[in-house]
Image 1 (cartoon, helix red, strand yellow):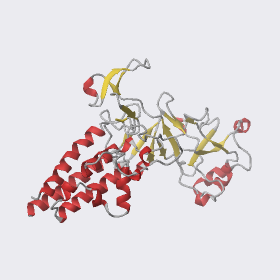
Image 2 (image 1 turned 90 degrees about the horizontal axis):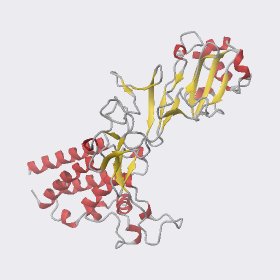
Image 3 (image 1 turned 180 degrees about the horizontal axis):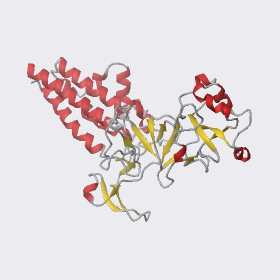
Image 4 (image 1 turned 180 degrees about the vertical axis):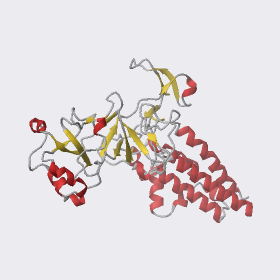
Length: 385
């Protein structure tokens, strides 16, 4: 084994423990092909128990309301929002299948609410709705929907329908259907009402969640090495895993991260896009991996002004297809082709972790699997030689 190969393998082995150190939150496993981001919880052993959802035997993620469950069609952890599939109409009727449950009824004590991105169409309504602030006129959008949707043809016999934008105080936790009001509804997220019905998206209802506080704990063993179990000063009569000094709770990842502030000696408040002011602590694993690969500091003012931030520096070399220029010379010494490919793979993985948009970054499970794959390939090549 060449010194470079041994160093590369050692680098890989050293990187694996960082996954658990930097990302201590217990994220729930995927539900079928749908990722379950923190804080959503499908079991008592993962996520935050105030954010419970279900994963059924068929691999479908479900959102529970007070009296019903609805399939989750998409989840966006970046904006803390998910979209559920609203109830359908009973065959040949203008009655939704959840009429007996009075529609979508959220528990107002839980951290979920209906967003204002939903356009709600109430169908098959009684005359009592004509006195409501909803748009129940003959020009209401709901008539356009009924007249151009074959599956809603039965609603044409019920002349009163109404349209409104959800999210106000009256509809933050309830899209209600009942015999004395409206017996059916549907919902569309971010609907462009200028488009014909044929171009509308599939029905959906967007739900958002409040960012979670630190995890509840009963003892120090419930917390990771970056936090301490102590009483919640908010007076909620529970204890939580509060981050150690120098660390900050990241509610989107469910982990304590470095509390990095501006490190430009001239300050970051000048309105300029200072690269060293854009050090994102959520990407800390990618940064640490780059530090291991390059043997350089994450922030170093001894480098050129444009290269102070290691993450920005390496990202630029990748775009210029010269990533090996920043790799530690000791690693490159007498490196074989396999060694070089291993170093490149690690560099590309680290840069992938530094993508600005969270949905473009790999999950920590995917990172661990990628590192293990790189190790297996490198080990096999070494064994062959």
